[in-house]
Amino acid sequence: MFEEYLSDANYFATTARETNREANVARRYYRASIMCGWSAMEAFANYVALTFQEGQVLEPYELAFLNDRRFGLRRGQFTILEKTEHHPLAEKIRLLMSRFVPDFDFDRNASWCQMLQFKEVRDQLVHSRQEEDETELEEYDKEISRGLSAIIDVMNVLCEGIFKRPLRKKLTDLKV
Image (tube, rainbow, N blue to C red; front, side, top):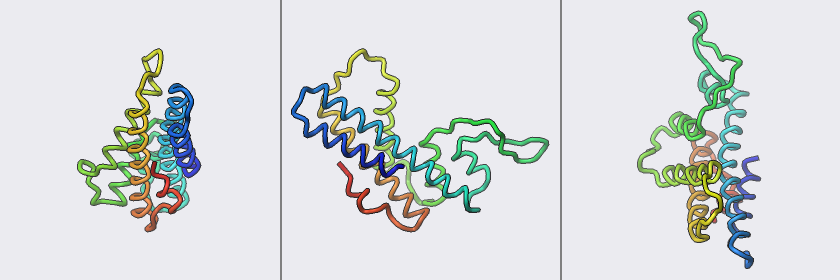
Protein backbone atom coordinates (compact mmCIF):
# COMPACT_ATOMS: atom_id res chain seq x y z
CA MET A 1 0.00 0.00 0.00
CA PHE A 2 2.89 2.37 0.67
CA GLU A 3 3.69 2.48 -3.04
CA GLU A 4 0.18 3.67 -3.86
CA TYR A 5 0.38 6.36 -1.18
CA LEU A 6 3.68 7.59 -2.61
CA SER A 7 2.12 7.75 -6.06
CA ASP A 8 -0.91 9.56 -4.64
CA ALA A 9 1.31 12.09 -2.86
CA ASN A 10 3.17 12.74 -6.09
CA TYR A 11 -0.08 13.04 -8.06
CA PHE A 12 -1.62 15.53 -5.65
CA ALA A 13 1.56 17.65 -5.49
CA THR A 14 1.84 17.70 -9.27
CA THR A 15 -1.84 18.57 -9.62
CA ALA A 16 -1.46 21.39 -7.08
CA ARG A 17 1.38 22.84 -9.13
CA GLU A 18 -0.47 22.55 -12.40
CA THR A 19 -3.79 23.92 -11.22
CA ASN A 20 -4.80 27.24 -12.71
CA ARG A 21 -7.69 27.57 -10.31
CA GLU A 22 -7.88 29.53 -7.12
CA ALA A 23 -5.27 29.10 -4.40
CA ASN A 24 -7.67 27.22 -2.11
CA VAL A 25 -7.93 24.43 -4.68
CA ALA A 26 -4.15 24.15 -4.88
CA ARG A 27 -3.95 24.11 -1.06
CA ARG A 28 -6.44 21.24 -1.01
CA TYR A 29 -4.17 19.21 -3.30
CA TYR A 30 -1.06 20.08 -1.28
CA ARG A 31 -2.75 19.01 1.97
CA ALA A 32 -3.79 15.72 0.38
CA SER A 33 -0.22 15.24 -0.84
CA ILE A 34 1.20 15.77 2.64
CA MET A 35 -1.28 13.35 4.21
CA CYS A 36 -0.55 10.68 1.60
CA GLY A 37 3.19 11.20 1.91
CA TRP A 38 3.22 10.60 5.64
CA SER A 39 0.74 7.73 5.30
CA ALA A 40 3.18 6.13 2.86
CA MET A 41 5.83 6.08 5.57
CA GLU A 42 3.39 4.57 8.06
CA ALA A 43 2.33 1.91 5.56
CA PHE A 44 6.00 1.18 4.79
CA ALA A 45 6.77 0.61 8.48
CA ASN A 46 3.76 -1.70 8.73
CA TYR A 47 4.90 -3.57 5.61
CA VAL A 48 8.33 -4.13 7.13
CA ALA A 49 6.81 -5.25 10.43
CA LEU A 50 4.56 -7.77 8.67
CA THR A 51 7.51 -9.05 6.65
CA PHE A 52 9.48 -9.67 9.82
CA GLN A 53 6.53 -11.23 11.59
CA GLU A 54 6.82 -14.16 9.20
CA GLY A 55 10.53 -14.66 9.87
CA GLN A 56 12.77 -15.05 12.87
CA VAL A 57 14.91 -11.98 12.21
CA LEU A 58 13.77 -9.63 14.99
CA GLU A 59 13.48 -10.17 18.69
CA PRO A 60 9.90 -10.57 19.99
CA TYR A 61 10.03 -7.22 21.80
CA GLU A 62 11.19 -5.50 18.58
CA LEU A 63 8.26 -7.00 16.67
CA ALA A 64 5.89 -5.99 19.45
CA PHE A 65 7.22 -2.44 19.29
CA LEU A 66 6.82 -2.26 15.50
CA ASN A 67 3.29 -3.68 15.72
CA ASP A 68 2.14 -1.34 18.52
CA ARG A 69 1.80 -4.13 21.02
CA ARG A 70 2.48 -3.68 24.70
CA PHE A 71 5.19 -5.89 26.12
CA GLY A 72 6.66 -6.44 29.54
CA LEU A 73 7.38 -8.90 32.27
CA ARG A 74 4.72 -11.13 33.72
CA ARG A 75 5.82 -13.41 36.56
CA GLY A 76 9.44 -12.83 35.57
CA GLN A 77 8.88 -13.83 31.94
CA PHE A 78 9.00 -11.53 28.92
CA THR A 79 5.49 -11.38 27.48
CA ILE A 80 3.75 -9.67 24.63
CA LEU A 81 0.46 -8.47 26.04
CA GLU A 82 -2.88 -8.35 24.25
CA LYS A 83 -3.13 -4.61 24.81
CA THR A 84 -2.06 -2.19 22.13
CA GLU A 85 0.29 0.69 22.81
CA HIS A 86 1.04 3.39 20.27
CA HIS A 87 4.67 3.74 19.37
CA PRO A 88 5.65 6.82 17.33
CA LEU A 89 6.46 6.15 13.70
CA ALA A 90 9.77 8.00 13.87
CA GLU A 91 10.85 5.72 16.73
CA LYS A 92 9.90 2.62 14.73
CA ILE A 93 11.98 3.86 11.82
CA ARG A 94 14.81 4.70 14.22
CA LEU A 95 14.69 1.13 15.59
CA LEU A 96 14.85 -0.33 12.07
CA MET A 97 17.69 2.00 11.06
CA SER A 98 19.67 1.18 14.19
CA ARG A 99 19.21 -2.52 13.57
CA PHE A 100 19.82 -2.68 9.81
CA VAL A 101 21.81 0.47 8.99
CA PRO A 102 23.97 0.76 12.12
CA ASP A 103 26.21 3.51 10.72
CA PHE A 104 23.24 5.78 9.91
CA ASP A 105 23.86 9.21 11.44
CA PHE A 106 20.52 10.53 12.65
CA ASP A 107 22.01 13.89 13.60
CA ARG A 108 23.70 14.60 10.27
CA ASN A 109 21.51 12.88 7.70
CA ALA A 110 19.59 15.57 5.83
CA SER A 111 16.79 13.22 4.75
CA TRP A 112 16.15 12.11 8.32
CA CYS A 113 15.96 15.72 9.54
CA GLN A 114 13.72 16.74 6.63
CA MET A 115 11.45 13.75 7.24
CA LEU A 116 10.98 14.85 10.85
CA GLN A 117 10.28 18.41 9.68
CA PHE A 118 7.71 17.02 7.22
CA LYS A 119 6.07 15.17 10.12
CA GLU A 120 5.72 18.50 11.91
CA VAL A 121 4.01 19.99 8.84
CA ARG A 122 1.65 17.03 8.73
CA ASP A 123 0.99 17.30 12.48
CA GLN A 124 0.13 21.00 12.10
CA LEU A 125 -2.47 20.04 9.50
CA VAL A 126 -3.94 17.18 11.52
CA HIS A 127 -4.02 19.14 14.77
CA SER A 128 -4.73 22.54 13.27
CA ARG A 129 -5.91 25.40 15.43
CA GLN A 130 -6.51 27.71 12.49
CA GLU A 131 -9.92 28.53 11.10
CA GLU A 132 -8.61 28.81 7.56
CA ASP A 133 -5.55 27.64 5.70
CA GLU A 134 -3.59 30.68 4.56
CA THR A 135 -0.33 28.86 3.93
CA GLU A 136 1.47 30.28 0.91
CA LEU A 137 1.51 27.92 -2.06
CA GLU A 138 5.27 28.30 -2.35
CA GLU A 139 5.63 27.13 1.25
CA TYR A 140 3.50 24.05 0.61
CA ASP A 141 5.45 23.30 -2.54
CA LYS A 142 8.77 23.58 -0.71
CA GLU A 143 7.60 21.36 2.15
CA ILE A 144 6.17 18.62 -0.05
CA SER A 145 9.24 18.64 -2.31
CA ARG A 146 11.63 18.24 0.59
CA GLY A 147 9.36 15.99 2.62
CA LEU A 148 8.44 13.51 -0.07
CA SER A 149 12.04 13.29 -1.24
CA ALA A 150 13.16 12.70 2.35
CA ILE A 151 10.60 9.96 2.91
CA ILE A 152 11.66 8.21 -0.29
CA ASP A 153 15.35 8.53 0.67
CA VAL A 154 14.76 7.10 4.16
CA MET A 155 12.70 4.23 2.72
CA ASN A 156 15.44 3.56 0.18
CA VAL A 157 18.17 3.44 2.83
CA LEU A 158 16.05 1.03 4.87
CA CYS A 159 15.33 -1.19 1.85
CA GLU A 160 19.03 -1.40 1.09
CA GLY A 161 19.79 -2.20 4.74
CA ILE A 162 16.98 -4.71 5.27
CA PHE A 163 16.37 -6.29 1.88
CA LYS A 164 19.80 -5.60 0.35
CA ARG A 165 18.22 -3.85 -2.62
CA PRO A 166 16.89 -0.35 -3.25
CA LEU A 167 13.31 0.75 -3.67
CA ARG A 168 11.95 0.23 -7.13
CA LYS A 169 13.03 2.87 -9.60
CA LYS A 170 9.45 3.96 -10.22
CA LEU A 171 9.32 5.03 -6.56
CA THR A 172 12.68 6.75 -6.38
CA ASP A 173 11.73 8.66 -9.54
CA LEU A 174 8.67 10.13 -7.77
CA LYS A 175 10.67 12.86 -6.09
CA VAL A 176 8.74 16.05 -6.66
